[in-house]
Image 1 (cartoon, rainbow, N blue to C red):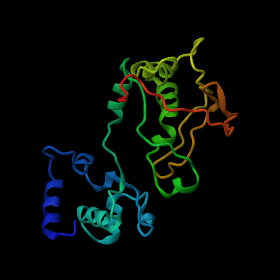
Image 2 (image 1 turned 135 degrees about the vertical axis):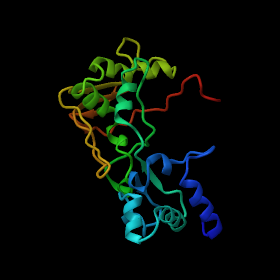
Image 3 (image 1 turned 90 degrees about the vertical axis):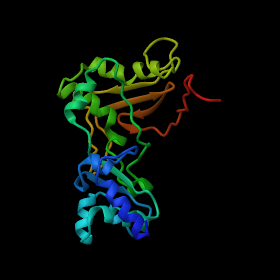
Length: 230
């Protein structure tokens, strides 16, 4: 990225539809839809939470040049969020009966080292959003169906034996929530916010959340389906 000729080649490629690679800059529709979420350099961390367009204006430079400069300065890939999804399409997919829900975001906590980055809001609100926004408020799917798609269906799809159902002989993984109040609170500007409306949580029969407060218990374990390579 410090070679001018290479930078010009990259700049030309980024501004057109990709041929054999994922051009998220182009797909997002420009720098206004790219949020800078995580830097390694302490010097650059104040830019966390700003869009690429904002930082480019601050520096008085082209957005693509700015992106390459930031990567070179940080000596890392830089964590970014891209706004490329259609809410209408999300609802269409949610309505399909075979769709289950998950998240690829890492576990977070609103404290300590986690506060040095701006994760995607799904880290805190993914599942509560399904129950609150899409089921209760917008009625895209019934609440019972939403619960099934968050528990039994993914457990079955992944081949996780004795998980995902409230039945005798199953592991006691139980979430007690208030369907009238459950909601996600995390936003792109302030992602480190827990969802509300979850009262109690049991993992492997041990209570880890009581009256919405963590008990300190850590009974969780890694789960492997039949697809695990030994």
